[in-house]
Image (cartoon, rainbow over all chains, first blue to last red):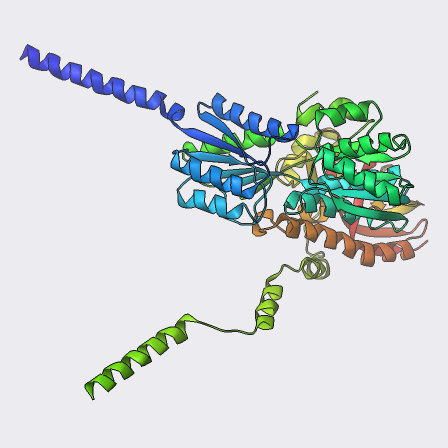
Length: 315
Length: 207
């Protein structure tokens, strides 16, 4: 009788220990994939690392994948991470249209996807999308642009990737303001793919036919730095205003030094952390998510730069 | 005879299957249908401005200014509207005032208690109308640009229909009723710099 009681006690204890181990190890067993459009741009590196860091803080395994601005590469990542048994994807899409099929594939495999920074053109495919309010940021930047140029002058616009909604949300926000002032003339509008070197090349070429510009509006900070380099090489850095978008560290430093006129601060850290926290909420049982959550973007100038740190961190 | 019947029946069945499997439509008809499915932000904004402004609930301007001066964060959270994660809150307000200054970008109204507000006549931009009124929701739009176009078109409507009337009728000393949209940055609220985008203007008294 005594042996029987002892046996059942041991059995109950063992079962309890197994149950405890399962509970404490629940999050550690789950894996989050952080798929980033490109790690060639420091802004996206911050986005990816912040997402992975927050996921690890919450007790998950996190791995970063680089899509190298290529939707085929991105599709490969999705196939691999579905096969590898990942549990959620924190996703920065390469293309608002081209990335939809990848997110659909993940949805069919039962994986929740949380888009960061860039949206996909589909509702109810991603679990939730956390994006910068690019349009409104560029409306405010456009107002500052108009006032800086006293409502007149010639300017160049450098666009980002043409397949990315952010490119057009920024451009349309900017033009919704600037086009109301007929004395502001856009002499060239060209894509430089959000790339610093390409922006430098494009602006060097534009300056040959339009040497008398007053400003350059760039769809991101990497292109603003490239444009500034082109202006330095042409001896026009002091007379031409450069406007960027992102709040990257080198541009924030350049604004302090008076080299770049303004940028719009979006916070990759806040977006990434929010995405990881939403994925965590999903694992905790939450299923009601807003489809899109825009994050405010603020204009940074020499007058207010002391209130901001790079990449949206607090000063 | 049996064979003829068998093959005839099979032919009819195959023809029926093919007929139901394939639909041929003129390309221009399909394109026309797709165009009508595109979101028409201009029409949406025009309908709102023509039919919804009068009944749009609004806060009284004097109470709005008083509360904003006391506890702006609590007031904004209770009465304002915002989009996503943001410090910018939007409101619809209304009131009466007399024109005390006509400037390049504003018409300033004295409210009778020593305070004043500026009605914008230039730089009509942003989302104050769309988000303050709550007339549109971002989750209803597959492409966020459609949602943003609503603000552009609402602001165009104000620029084209309300501002010319205001510029034309508002003279120094005249009293007018206004209903408008306003945005407050709650991290740095400054009631003295409030700029109201006009939605409805009525001249009550001329000097």
